[in-house]
Length: 84
Image 1 (cartoon, helix red, strand yellow):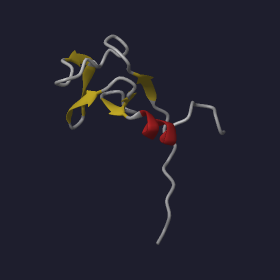
Image 2 (cartoon, helix red, strand yellow; image 1 turned 120 degrees about the horizontal axis):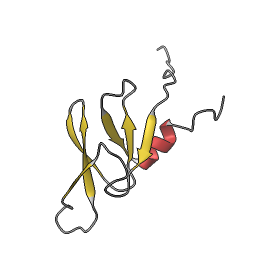
Image 3 (tube, one colour; image 1 turned 60 degrees about the vertical axis):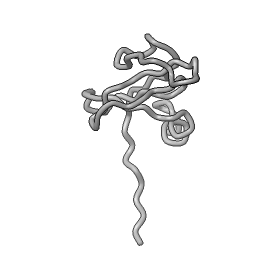
């Protein structure tokens, strides 16, 4: 079986903690039984929930956004210029 490496792509990303941290995130009511705020971001496939600490990644074409959990973000991305 052949092996493939993911092509490097530079993305813009902001870690979201509260309303106002990212202009693409709108605030919605906390989940039932929680005081933790949450947000909603429009993705190519519809709306996605953003929780405090999630990263909001801008699509490479700049036309959409999507949330990413911190552990997945840390395993997938590094600051531009590191490791080159």
